[in-house]
Length: 281
Image 1 (cartoon, rainbow, N blue to C red):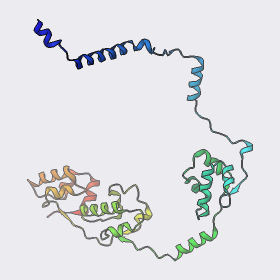
Image 2 (tube, rainbow, N blue to C red; image 1 turned 60 degrees about the horizontal axis):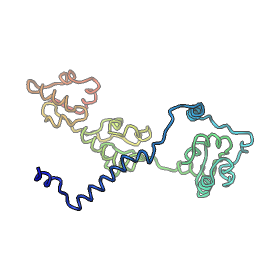
Image 3 (cartoon, rainbow, N blue to C red; image 1 turned 45 degrees about the vertical axis):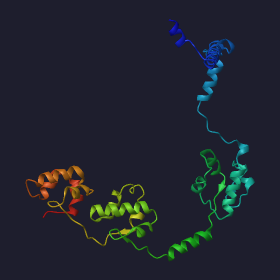
Image 4 (cartoon, one colour; image 1 turned 45 degrees about the horizontal axis):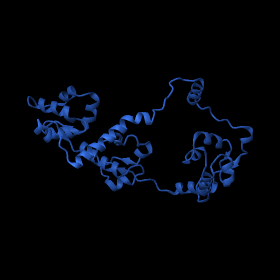
């Protein structure tokens, strides 16, 4: 017993100091609740608190302009900073817009007014009632003249265009150019300019004027032989895919495929798109 006590309860001077410090910390932690009482919060909801919550939840009403705040109409071209401030802009916004107009910027209509980066609905509704938009006739005439002397745009052959030709078209950048070329390769060539809608991500940016800049003169197609193409070649074609490629290779083991066989395993819409790219040899 003595051996046990001497082994486990015999501490060095440093260990004894540590135990004393630890005991003091524990004592402080235990008695802290009496030194620093926990604040008491009432769970009762008073009438004042309910009224305050109701005011916060109440939807904000549209601010209506008073008679005193209605401005006389003023010109967007000739107005100075003080006029814009009176119309509801901050001094910084007023300086920004006057600097923009001084350097040749134009606010020709309400759509240009709305494009200002600091514009919000309330300010826009106020300004459009009092701003007079003036169109620079000389500028418009020169613009019309430039358009009238422009040469007709040469349309680009969709099957021959390289990346530099594609990115020269407004609305098509390097990413879309590379996607168009890759999709053209997978297809075996375009047969219709409307197939641009099938290029990943491009459909959202295509406009009639953009599509009108393409033409298909070179109608050379790299045909896919249904009876000889490998599984990988079939699968990579955008109109076939993995599932149909499996079905085609499975059917080829027992017979030479003809057009009717393909029509039986795919939708009419898919076959109508695919028939321009396949042969049966």
